[in-house]
Image 1 (cartoon, helix red, strand yellow):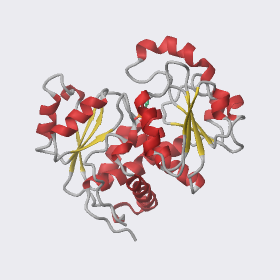
Image 2 (tube, rainbow, N blue to C red):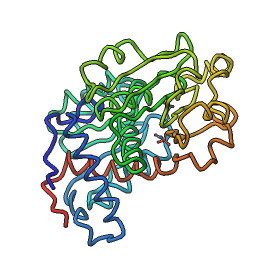
Image 3 (cartoon, rainbow, N blue to C red):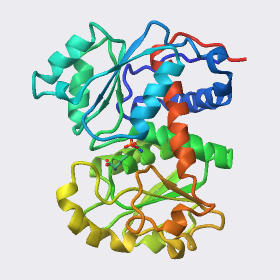
Length: 320
Ligand code: CP
Ligand code: NVA
């Protein structure tokens, strides 16, 4: 199987992938997941040999940081953990940080606030592969894990419907991108004033494949009707803490509970990127129900990020 690099050097958005890159990434992820028990005998165990990958996190993380570190090590690469005091643009310009790192490391995984800062960073360092580990606007690595999870659950995903209920945030945008590229219909249900950004809605028609549609709703019951999976995320993202009280009241009618799940198709999955806030965006019983695949999503972060790192940073890898 080919791990040929995508045309774009960076992964700042799902849209840095062509649909064929996305398909290939999920296929490689399936292989590395199956091969993980082989340990150092796995075909990808040396894929990043001699490569250094830096990690810079300006926001909290459990899943993304852990899974990237494990992925780099399991691919035979070296992790360079930067401390947040290297903060982008505070001690020296973003472009200088990028041009320093480019002289030492092959790739960098960044969690920060501004997508524009990520783009500026990536443009300043043409030899450095830059991966978005979450910005205010997008969370593309999460969407890769979500798509792998759906493929595992459903086999063919084309023509299915995923309903995202909640804030039209970074997770929602990347979920919309990946879903449309794989031919999955996506409903996004949000209160007025918290819909997907207009630019993300405008992109939908040009990235959609196999007739997949994006539909926006303000009524949760309408949006969930016919859903094969119901997805939610926190009402207050990192950086929005000052709005938490108002958001709790605006989003209260958008809680994913058993009554809402009952309006989706029988057997519909429950999805969440985590961390979850029980009693807010999801009830305890839905979170803990057999429909919930949230820990599969979390596990799959590791496998898709191994696939992504090998596509961006490794040479061709042979799988049995
Ligand atoms: N889902 C996710 O990105 O989790 P972390 O914030 O813990 O990395
Ligand atoms: N929307 C959330 C996702 C956390 C993984 C945030 O940005 O805080």
